[in-house]
Image (cartoon, rainbow, N blue to C red; front, side, top):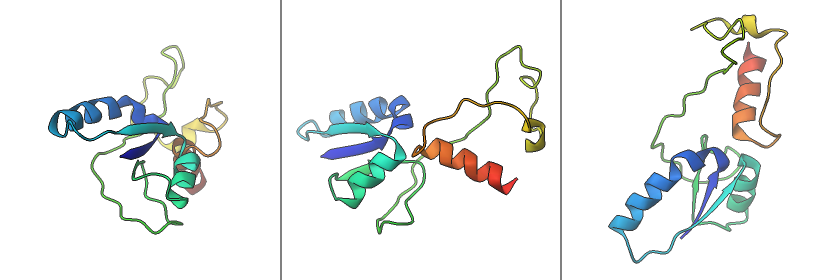
Length: 118
């Protein structure tokens, strides 16, 4: 089974694969980690059997089955004035600098969508 997963899945995929191998020891699984853009390219070319990503693609006909939540948050250094704020409006982030994922990343796309809406 050729499994492609977005790079943020590296935090939970090992646990899932260990459990899968225990249940199905005879199945060989090859895991490739990519950003969202890379996973979409593999899926579009039909170069993988299964994909793990945060949001189903709209541009590719496929079947999506949600199996986990993916909460996101803004993270700041402990010394930053906003580090202790909880449930603050996005407007307090105006003028702040950000370290972001690369173009093509689903995490970055989600952040950009939220900021555009706000």
